[in-house]
Image 1 (tube, rainbow, N blue to C red):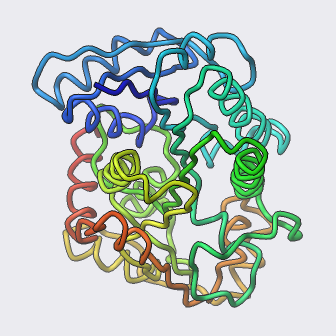
Image 2: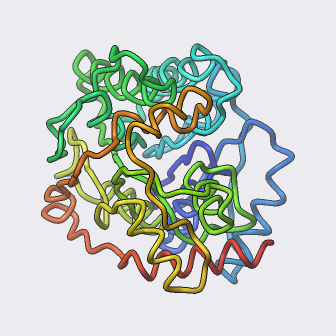
Amino acid sequence: MKKVLVTGGSSYIGKHCISQLLEKGYEVRTTLRDLKKADEIKVDLKKFLNKEFELEFFEADLIEDKGWNEAIDGCDAIFHLAGPFPFEVKVSEEEQIAPHVDGSLRILEISKKNNVNRIIMISSIAAAYMGKPGETNIDETKWTNENTKGIDAYTKSIVLKEKAAWKFVENNDSIKLTVINPPVVIGPGIGKPTKAGSLVLFKKLITKELPVAPPFKQGMVDVRDVAKIFLGALESDNTIGKRIFVAEGTYWVKDFCQMLIDIGHKAPTFTPPIFLVKFLSNFDKGLKQILPLLGVDMEINTDIAKTLLNFKPIPIRETIKETSDYISSYD
């Protein structure tokens, strides 16, 4: 039986990865920055799985070595999901980038030392298209230019993290790396809603805290499908050395809002002109992050996921309804 370490076990995607690994009979470990969260996570997972299970917890933070050797030693593979949330805008750029880049390299180095060679790491579609005005066909060959003027700290951290990981693999061929690049991740979580940026945005739309539908298009995928892709990559050597893009589809925000309206929400219907969004971005950091996407009719190519892992995503309308029900159940 393989033993898998899931870094960032309290995260939105992390809990789903843990649950799916346990369901398939894997031995699972996870890391937390604070072990005080362990009991809550066990309760959430027990309620979700409706059965008893074994789950090991280790305290470890991406910004220091402490705890990582113990967590990694004896594992067969690592799902690396830990990292600051994209909507934590109160931290400096350096504080956003360091855990992603230095922390990921720390995990790779310690994994190599412990002969744990199979790493499946989370990245983002943002590592492929931000900062490239007019880029519409997004596939695994595309890379965001992290030096683009005005690019937000989260996107920069994701690009630098992924590039650093692939560079590490070039120099250490014993490491078998796969990178998963999802877009906006929605879907029902396990336990109460986290600070995941996509869920925050979802709630802002259904409560009309965000009063307009900005003119940009974004990919979307169900959190359960992202976890399924992680497991699929683990069980398929064909994914080693590859970036895997996963998305159900891409949608204009106004169309996404219409789907919310169709299930009874009072989502925004007005799409402001691009020049107005650009002006308002001078006063709103959240709007500033979407400037490279304004007006771009983007599509995400998921052929690799479909070919190698038989990727058949949950329909987005189903995901939207279940996300709505999930968020409402905790209000």
